Length: 457
Ligand code: ADP
Image (cartoon, rainbow, N blue to C red):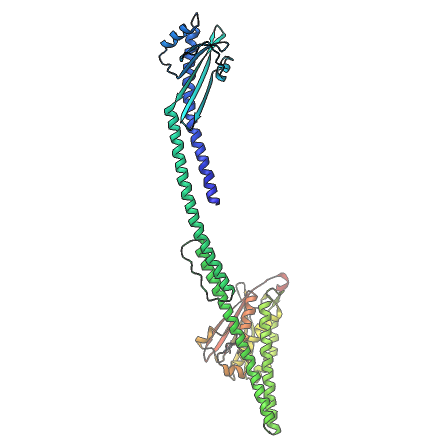
């Protein structure tokens, strides 16, 4: 409707403009020629000694160029002395004559659309020795010019109607397609709202709505992936919790149903205890994952990395000793980074614990701190079992374990590295892994350095 209205207004303005321009062009040429003719007649009449119907008639007859529809000569009171149509001795008090008797050259015109005629009138005073003695009045009907103006107006009007019809048709067709495509998007949105994330919106063409459709499909794909991840996480988590619970149930049933000696019963109860510990560890890790996912904007502080690394090494040295792993800390360059201390502790702890757990007796573990450009680098390298190439891409996934039996035996839940990745990302850091099966693994974590005067002292 807006398009139709705007074009209609523009076309009507064009109509008005073209019609008034064509009339104005005619008016300008007509005005000068008619006033000239009137002045010529008035000048000739002014030279006459006696001004009456006969003398004026004779004089005008000599001026052959005066071929008007109506030609009147009046005296100074407006009384007609001469009329080329014979109506003399009456008063002709036309507005043009009254103005001419007031010493003005006058021109006026009128266009009548319905019969397409242009009527022009002109009058000039007759002046003898500085006195107005009468006036000459002319009136012409221009049928060809009138017809021409009428035909211009009709043509422009026809073009206007055709153009407006095209605009209306185009607008109707466009708005119809546009709203049907919008309806298509809306109905797809409703389907997605009801939970069918596999639904795809099919849009053809190359306009903005097609791009909107593509974006919409990308969005639903992401929703589908995150929904799949969520349900996989829930089923993995329940499986993780179910396994130790099933073991506990089995062990308690055996204790209750069988008569066993005190030593066997003690063994069973110890097993129940270690399953309960595993359950505890898994729920703690799940809780810390949920915490990391939920708390995006925890307040961080600028801290040096070395003290936290040393604290973790102290904590894990008994485990390293019992596994026969020699641990070494190599602080080549300490760096101040913007992070929560608990987060840094968790990263170093999980990587170091893995370096011990997935190592071989007599193996080595080295934690190195260096600085490269504007990044503080933490490197945890072990000489352990390594990670097969096809598994490297999955180790940061939740509940993923390369060797399930080994991971379980060492109390792993498959959540440690996914926690590390989430924390590293939250603190604008990066993590990479380089591993050779049978030789060892190197995890490298980097964070942007925050050099402040206080930190560098
Ligand atoms: P888990 O609790 O099982 O240790 P993680 O998320 O910490 O879970 O690790 C995922 C898997 O990646 C582990 O099960 C293990 O197979 C593998 N992995 C992690 N760190 C190492 C390492 N330093 N050397 C060899 N394999 C490792």
